Length: 130
Image (cartoon, rainbow, N blue to C red):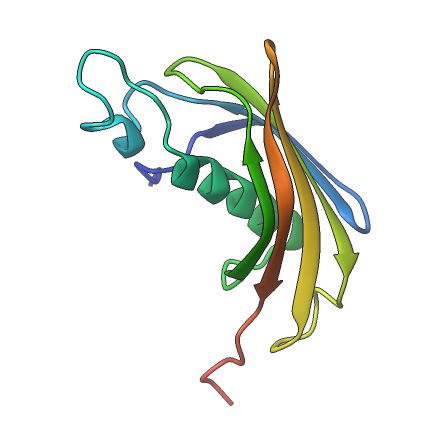
């Protein structure tokens, strides 16, 4: 079942520490509900969710959590129907271990150019099982 908050991933590529996705931002995503009537725009929190989605796909880690934002800059707007390219590079940490901080740098682009970018800290929590 598709997540009503996440875009359709068209292309996904992974390397040891670099992850890329090409996303189609569908008109029916819940981010656009009420933001803004008659002129829908993807909020910045939605863009961060797409970056986190890219990392979770690349690492195969649905439990990955954003803990801090070190740097963040939005330079453009995202509208329904836009195609985005997201590149995330891990800069430190071991993504296979739990309870270890990972630092990542990301960039969001569209056909119009750079939309945003920044640096974030993430962590995989310790599993409650065994």
